[in-house]
Amino acid sequence: MSQKPVSVVLCARNEAARIEKSIRAIQACQPAELIVVDGGSTDDTVAIAESMGVKVIRSGGKGLAPDRQLGADNASHELVAFIDADHRPAPDALTSLQKDMEEFGLDVVQAGVGIEDNGFWNRAEHDAMAVFQHTPGPRSLMIGVAPTLYRREVLQAVRFDEVNKEQSDDADLFKRIVDTGRFTFGVGRTIVPQYHHPEFSDYMGKFRWYGRRDAEFIRTHKDRAHSMIFHLLFRYPIWRPIKSVFVGRPRAAIYFWVCGGTRLGIVIKKGLERLFSDQPPKTANTGDA
Image (cartoon, rainbow, N blue to C red; front, side, top):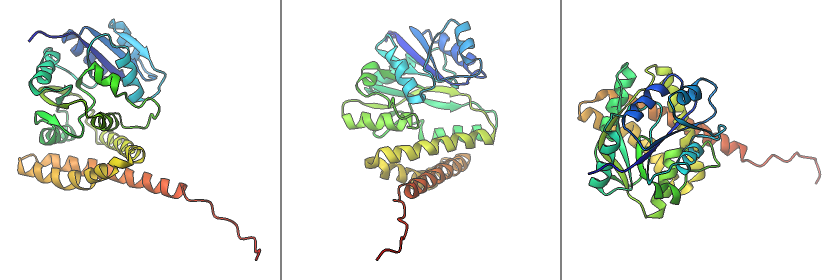
């Protein structure tokens, strides 16, 4: 099949250490256009992108979900790909994703994610992705927002949450895509390498970030709260570790236990905070009969 023109949107904030390699990899894919949406960087992210001839839009730090929508709104072509600063797509990635989209009849297709090996936690995360994310085909609940190729009409019909900067960009978007009943999505055969900092402290920071967004998803989408809670109470600590051991990837079980446990802890903490903050103030006893 002939490749259709693709607009690539790269959302970044303080990604000076990683963005150059990502831009070079994306440029090797020969997209029709590349847009960097900067979310209020205080490092050299913008300077690096501009020095490489890339169009940069400054969002003013509105949040990741609004930044993604801003990039999609400024895209010129009918196919839009979100590729982040930690992704390293191969030169044929955009063509390969289009093939995946056609093969599976999808409106949105995510690439499988392969984590570059720089330490134990990178290997554990890579194994985790292989266990639950690398099976090509349609999905019914959600996929990741990036590295993902979209028909632009999806992002026009179902927009990212542009108000709540604490909202989970992927869980929220795909919840509302499912609600329309109009669009199909899934994971393709394409694999995109991803560079994550290997330190345990970086992973814990990421897990806590996920947990805060899980909690916000539960707060704002009470009709799907049970699904998120089931995800954290069963899929992460039980089902996925069992599957990991069964397929010979025990490191993934450790990843699921630590990631899921951290996220669940944050969800419980946020829930308790809301519970007590929502209590009506106690009325002082004046002694009146």
